[in-house]
Length: 88
Image (cartoon, rainbow, N blue to C red; front, side, top):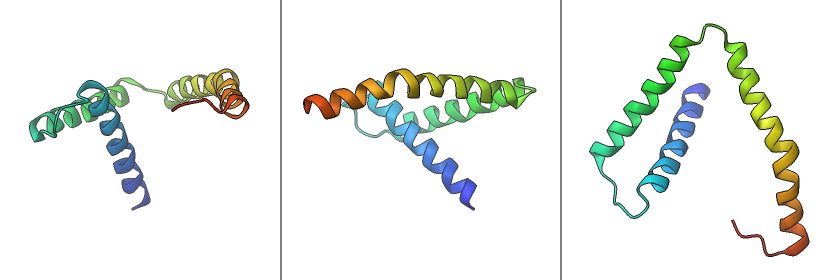
């Protein structure tokens, strides 16, 4: 039950980001939502079918997030707390 709720929250959050990025001023359309959701699930399924070893995916995700945590996040925190002008 926990995994299903987590996957739903991740999918919902990603869909919101995609819709706000590509269609910022457009109202909700069920047809567009169904197409984007189907493409997102199909992409995840294609990646899982092609990948034989999950270790490669975890290594890529880990290296990407490690770089962001080491080189991007500290300067952003410094800018936010040192200047008080940081807008997000």
